[in-house]
Length: 121
Image (cartoon, rainbow, N blue to C red; front, side):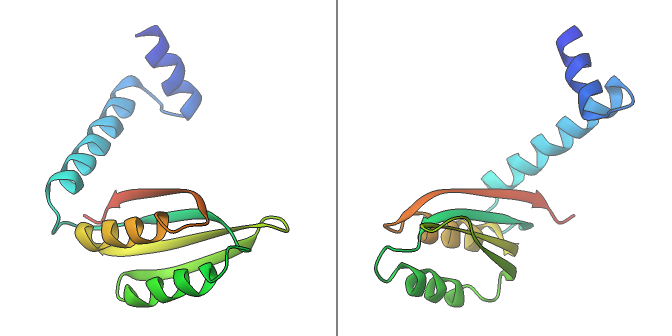
């Protein structure tokens, strides 16, 4: 419990109960989106890719257009001469968000990515 209290305090929780409540909420959200492909969620999808990979910019753009109904917003950042960061804000059914994530993150030239989901309710 000492370690838990240290982490809780470092993160700004006022007490143990508040930290535990937050952990339980996160566990329920994660369980729901892992087990209910129709659940309505929101989240972000971030990916880093090599913009020198031939045709990758166009392909990523085309895939995003295929999922325009769940993409709320996007940000494109030039990290350096070779790498770009793309962050998508998404909202919709888990099934579609996962499809989008899988399609984008598996393209040749995409170096890394992460899908983060939070509950809408």
